[in-house]
Figure 1 (tube, each protein chain N blue to C red):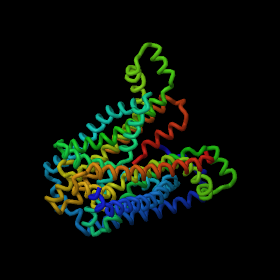
Figure 2 (cartoon, rainbow over the protein chains, first blue to last red):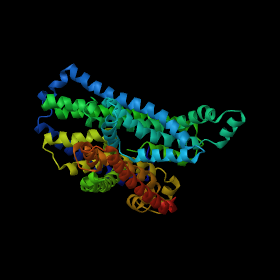
Figure 3 (cartoon, one colour):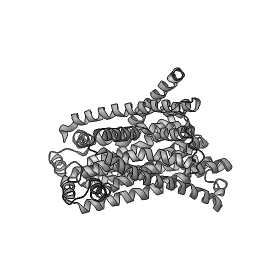
Figure 4 (tube, helix red, strand yellow):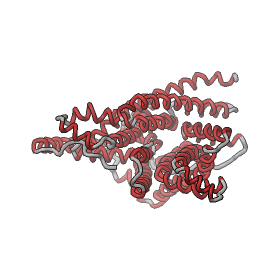
Length: 286
Length: 214
């Protein structure tokens, strides 16, 4: 997203002033970075001893497996929430009021409850009902409960945006209600909502780090902590490596969402500006 | 219902801590986010690049990771605050980039003609920003900012990860101790739902009030 030029092109005097401020800012930034470097150096965080464990391949394998576990949970959660989200979207658009209201309550409740609370809920309540699942499934179920509510609402608004004439045309061609949904409405809604769905994937991926609290599922944050318990000298280093790993995956997913959004904008250049604002806003929800 | 009475105090202090974290986090994030946006649109390239780097880094590192890094990692460097203060600071650091991006999308909706009219009328950069650009930008993004706020209310629960006794933490504690977790989780879910609905209503009202500027 580019920012509009808000001001006039600077004249000679303003340019000189800008150069001065620029130099000052660089100096200030350098000073800040140097201060941070000093603090890290004073605690020996750059010393070879602190980074020595990272020369072992086994440690990188542990971290890599952690990251893969995060991705696996997010992918399974996303796949499940696409299925349940599609069902919810159908329910939200149902002609029967009780179905509609029940689906509305489900989406409102699970979209507004924190993921960590859902994770505590699945890991504490499900075992009391005899469901002895692994921590992976507790995480996936929590992610799915939350995410299918969000995806359901997204798909509902995607379906609502399709002109009603298409439903009528499908009826005229003899499609049943279910076939209309499956062949005409849902594919279009999925495509028009794909940037928002990728953003939802980012949210899910970030949420998988909460499995840290369960302890039984070795995701990236947990594996960094495990490294910290064995090599107490390298806890900070391991945490920073984990943070960078999360960051890189999220940047890649963010680029994908932006690319999808801009491709759609090119395909439908005639659409009103309001929707563009909404699409870009969807990308910037924490 | 008698077993609940023992947890009422825990619960209400949990709700209070959640609300305090929300207010502190939101206030700080709004300030930091506005500063970041100003840096993004400034003609000084260093500021621009620094703000862009900040947004990219802190938006893409998950909140739990930042929380754990801040609470368990930074004390190794001798940087240590109370748990509550750490949680509030991390919420500010994590939420500010989202506010900045939202505000920036608001700035982009201001029409070029209007900016040209401002210059023709002799508005300098600062008065233009203060009197015309920022109020309009805030006006258009009330609803999206409200969404960021509602998500942040949910995000305050991540503080429970490091042991801040907020609503989620109190719920978990009660549920571990008691044999009726369903009721306890239901109560917590309703609390979050009510807070979210109230804030959502407030945001819609504000949005309608600000609609004149569009």
